[in-house]
Image (cartoon, helix red, strand yellow):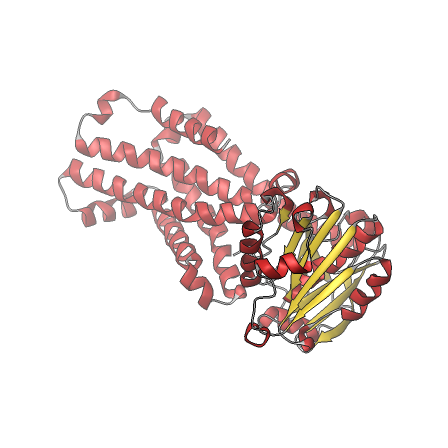
Length: 429
């Protein structure tokens, strides 16, 4: 589908490009710059749709994979748009036998709406730089989030020069109408599913903070109360993007998983302190309104192939795993839980987990640092010892990235089929 759209954009360029217009080097560069601009603008719209929260797309692919595609495509989009600028400027410089700087200044000051396009290009570059791995490690989630909001501003201001200065639209009214309609459709999807629908859900479900419970020194459970919450059709293992309407939380949405099955009037998330936002959840007050986008994710019982399941949890990953364990036990599955923690003080929800032992849960707490244990409790030998029938089970893993990578490597060495292994990345950056 992505390739088909790109070919359609190239066909639009080709239909408005005569062979005579490609006979000089300058004209050829300018024409190539035009197609780069069209493809770049099309890919920007694809970028927006990937994270527009389209229900059918999220159900088919998963928000974690859509976010990965969005990140992977982002750098290429900026490269294509930069190529568009360089080629158009170079083409004009060759045609007029002038310097690139003079050609750039002429385009900026005489072509309609190109100053707005320049502002948009600067916005795209800022977003691209903030998306680099080194920059992401240094930026807070909130700073990164608001820099990415610049994308919408950049798309908006850059749009006008496409219509007023783009030869493919100035000379082709039908193409102009289709292009405007395409932008309007994407804008409508973003506004409806990312803004209007969460607001509509709040008015229907009136979700608010009920209470905050300290589970460990750095982990809290936030209970939320609302109306008809079962209508959300949220399953254990899924997550929402939460926006708490209070100082320090309103202006960014964060992904947190459900840590208990949904009740008619109550939801719960369990979060480990990993920064300003997650740490601030401990100070939420009763009655704070909550906007929730979702549910999202495929880390659910529907993904399993067997009625025998191994759950591996660490850190805040115990939240979705604990919720999933309750559902699986309720459906009669054979469930083993391995809970990895550095110290006993880091073990959250232990009373609830121990209570599920009476329902058939087999749990092993893998507590201690590797230097103390003198072995990796999640290495191949350990996994084979804890769960001898591992190959015959579905494996659900949720926890810190280092733990997840260790378990995945162990499972590969033990020849567990890839389609029996289930993980999900909840970070959007």
